[in-house]
Length: 210
Image 1 (cartoon, rainbow, N blue to C red):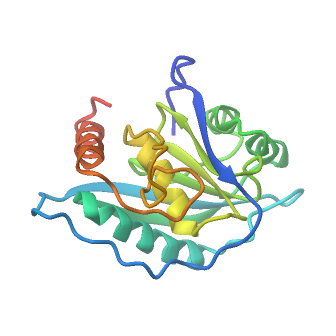
Image 2: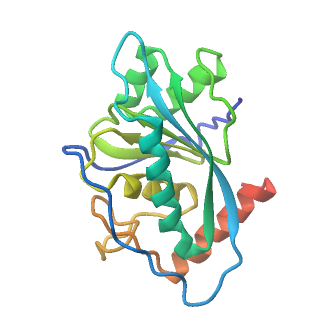
Image 3: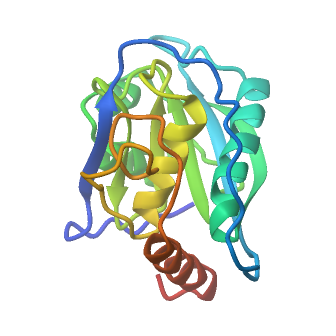
């Protein structure tokens, strides 16, 4: 796989501090008030491991469950996250260390250089890593990838869903901790304006113009 790594777009959005593992959410997400035509986005999720250094402690089975709950969160926007691949990839320890410095660009460059393979990437790509530099997760804006730390202050599905929000053009909100884009809480709701923006960008990804 080859990624476009324009320096104009490699801006890291890091969300929350990682201090403790949090149990899955049991909160149900309200459907949109009016029916929306479903936009399907394929998502590939990978557990990152190394034979010479720190590895994610997650299992693919756990990530399958997390992915299902992420799909539930995004259903409120009429966006279906089709989890097409969940797997484990072996990555050189120095590349994993770059993620601990919140350098997603170095991770993707290493993949481009053939140092490890990202099989069957979807429209969105998530990596579960041992450390995200003290953040719950981050994404490099302008790219379709996000990273989630093993240890999180919020529900695991909330981290990935929040980062997907950034990929779909959403910014942090500062005034309502119940919202998905408020940093460092378990808020999961989206406003009508956020839904409109996320759907616009999601459709652009499918059409190849984003």
